Amino acid sequence: MSAPRSLRVVIAEDSAILRDGLAGLLTERGHEVVAMVGDALSLREVVGAQRLDVAVVDVRMPPTFTDEGLLAAIELRRAYPDVGVLVFSQWIETRYATELLAAGAGGVGYLLKDRVADVADFVDALHRVATGGTALDPEVVKQLMGASRQQDSLARLTPRERAVLELMAQGLTNNAIAAAITVTERAVEKHIGNIFTKLDLPPSDTRHRRVLAVLRLRG
Image (cartoon, rainbow, N blue to C red; front, side, top):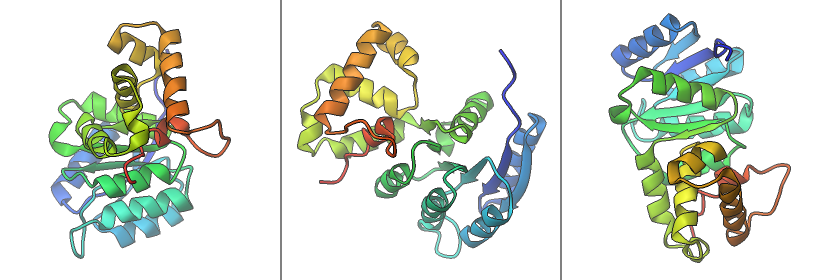
């Protein structure tokens, strides 16, 4: 298996210590940190001026420390769909997480700082997002799925289909899902087909059904 390619990364984080720490970890592993910024406005400027693979973005940044980073991430996904966005924060904003995921076909992630214990897992998630995949912390998935239970469409899913959907939301492949729930990959494909049907997600060239399947959070 070939080594993962080097990534060009921008880090948007208001904490200088965490910014420098992330930059050091990524540089040590052969990636290029092209910029480090501490506010959403600077993030927008950097992405517009640099050739990037992925942006690591905190949710709460100056000036109000509420949701500037996440809103900037949503804007970036719309304006630069080829640039992956990995939200890395201690806060879960389910409404904006939904909007971020809906803004593009993959290339997005949402990880919680306090729950990333292994650097290799973080770097793997970064690669997945940079190459068009998804990476969601299980706690983020839990909150997204918890809100979605209010919707009739999701209520139609069987317990096994719901379990598959939760694993899909974490970014697992069909093969990985099959291993996690101890079934064949063909059985997983059947479950996913049923999920798409029950959630009214027909085949589309412009929409990422695996992502949209976890976005039924608002009635």
